[in-house]
Amino acid sequence: DKTIRIWDVEKGEQEGTSMVHKYWMQSLAITRDGKRILSGDREERINVWDVETHEPVEEWAGNTGLIWCIALSPDDQLIANGGDDGKVVIREMKESGGIKHSIEAGGWVTSLCFSPHGEKLACAVGNTSGKPGVIHVYDVESGEPVLGPIEGQAWVHCVLWSHDGSKLFSASDDATIRCWDPETGGSIGEPWIGHMGAIVSISLSPDGTKLASASRDRTVRFWDSRSGDPIEHPLQHEDPVYAVAFSPSGEFVASGGYNSNLKL
Image: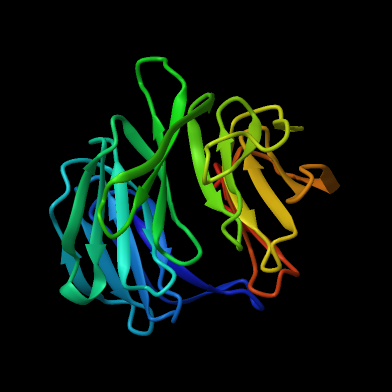
């Protein structure tokens, strides 16, 4: 509905006014200090919002397509965004979104994630030609590729580093989660199987021991992040689930999907 809303999780009520875009949004990120929200839309711009006032404070141009994903570095100093123009753009927060690197990724950029120390950037690339999706890893300082393409899955919807940087997780259209060695690109173990539809979003618990996955099969599932074994029972939803995130305490997960509802 072209809006960003902030919710009181205790009451389940919206806080303040909605932040309204001209066009629908596909990507959202929040700075770690909780003061800024970054959002990307089909108008090829990133908007920066003040969390307290819900007002826009900056607008960053320089993209040439729909912005599909936004990632923040661990220190909130760098922002990476990508979309259907096949480019990864790395920006500097202190320079009002000034472009540090613009990298040709070779296909639709579906997901980005900085490594735990911020020195590397993982990038998932989908191919509209029917070819499998791939993962690239870039050096953030130089903008040069240091690993990839990592192949082995269908269209990759999400990439995520482990908290210690020793693993790279990916979730795909083929209903599997894969674990990769971020130094060699080799597969760690077998694909994680359990979902019956495309996996669109994954999230790690704060202690790094559990991984949650959201799927178009209308479930959220939980996995042991070390072994890849399923744990606990799936959370059933009425419609496809497109997003999942652990709470900072790790006690709860939030999910959102096709029916425009949030669940906690």
